[in-house]
Image 1 (tube, one colour):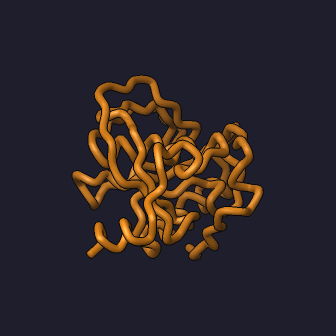
Image 2 (image 1 turned 90 degrees about the horizontal axis):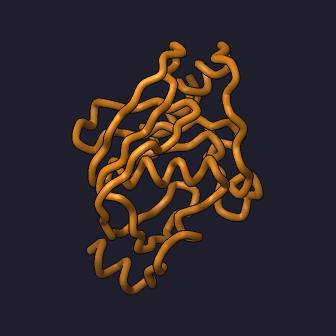
Length: 161
C-alpha cells in the first residue's frame, strides 16, 4: 500500500465528473487499499478518487458511529435521503477552509464493493453528511461551492478553540 497525494482546490481534476468503474481490476483493488491508507493517515472521514487524481466513481467513508468501519463505495449513488441537518464542513482538498452546509440527516447509498457485490448502506448524522460530500466530489463539486456560507478565520478560531 502507498500514501497518495491529496490534490488541492484549484486543481482542475476536482471539477471534473468521474467515470463509472466498469470492471474491478487489480488496479482498482490497489487504489482502494491506497485510498484507505491515505484516508487513515489524513485523519479525515472520507476520501474520493478525484481527490487523489483518479477520475473514477470511487469513494471511502468512515462510519462515524463505528470508527473501525470504512465503507468502500464503487459507483455509489444516493437512493434515499430524509430529514435535514446544518453544520460545519471541511475538506482534505480545501485545507483551512470551513463552511456551513445543509445536508440530509439520513442517507442511503447503493454501491458495489471490491468483490463486485452490490450493497446498500444507510448513514445518519455526520456519516450521511460525508456520503453527500464524497459523492459531490464524484460530480466535480467541492463543499465550498454548495455551502450556504463560508466561515471567516475568526469564526473558525472561535469554533475550533
